[in-house]
Length: 260
Length: 265
Image (cartoon, rainbow over all chains, first blue to last red; front, side, top):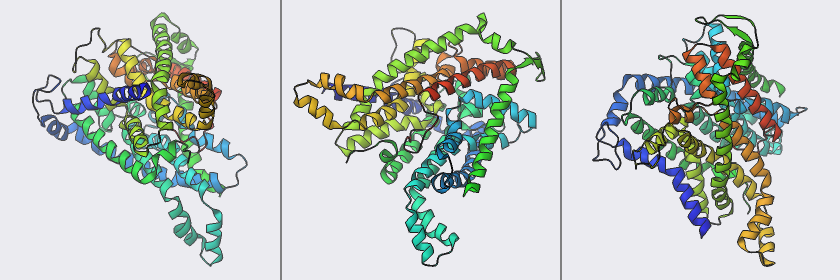
């Protein structure tokens, strides 16, 4: 009973800020108040019509699409190599591929800034996309690796012995069996890239900045609830995605070892 | 088959090149008013221990320690419930509520605390926003999902049979927890604490927004140096120290070798 109360209180602590953001986003005045004095959608209108957010949203789409399009095939190939390649030390290779995960954001950000400036690439989105590929690749490799390891090679051998070409085996047997892992990989890659902030802050200009960076700049300069509205849209999208993932991908199975 | 690894290794090489550029700049002399650098120097690292920045280093260590302890205490009950509940619906709800903030990103999460701590919802008896207290609340909230997942994974590996055995021999629930569950979940507690500590050491968005320039941690100093003063070598030295400390800490708990079974982002 005490445990239940504690868990409820802690979950409330974790959820409370989200609820406040959503409530404040409907606030009718620029001065924040809670509970709101009325209901208004003006901050949502502001989000959708603020030119810098439009530009940043488009940048987010381009950077995330570019990074995910590169990271998915690269990560899948690496996962197959790790699971099936008879490498001498797969753990060592995996550690290397997952290493960007453990590097502090400011170190990676400043490193890419120095590197990009040296190459004269900072005005384009090339450095942003390269950094995002490196940052989402570990998530892709890890999710795809789980599926690749659980894949029974006998199924592929059976298809091959029945006359399927290697390409056909890959397309008709390997790929469908990897699908849950690849869907999870795609989910992680998109979410991580869309939310990436610290590294992007260092390597973007006003013209190339993605949404989280534009939101950060706005929060620092203005106090009206526009960011609450934009945050609410982010939260809504996230809840839908996580719910769908939990429903169809057994998210718990990815994270926690179940008994029975 | 091995060729399949090549594209991924190229990506890692690009990432490594960025870190190499950072390390190289950390030992180059800063020329004020210029992005050009001078010769080799140790002055950037000496600067970290200067009077101007030592406060930020000290605050960072204290805040990280406090964050680790509070996060551990706050996460254990939730992780326990997540690992032990028999109801699929409770587990699903807890999991979604735990993961949702994890997926909403640093800015959304931190902005939410700007609203809560900034006397929007109710008036705090003591100032919270732009104080170390407020930053601490934000950091704990930020670390909880990670800690909950790591602890839940550890607790779910503790066979409930041991707990039932202890209970059947007359131990009360508190004693079962203290003598059986807690010691058996210790590996998760240790690795979770070190990971949260290491990540908090280089926290950026939370102190930047909730500290409002008055509470500075190492990563905020890196930003100020690199993006406001254009002192890339000075920022690089701070970032290099954060990088090395983080890698050493994570290596100590074996988190650098993360196999697929340790699937915690």
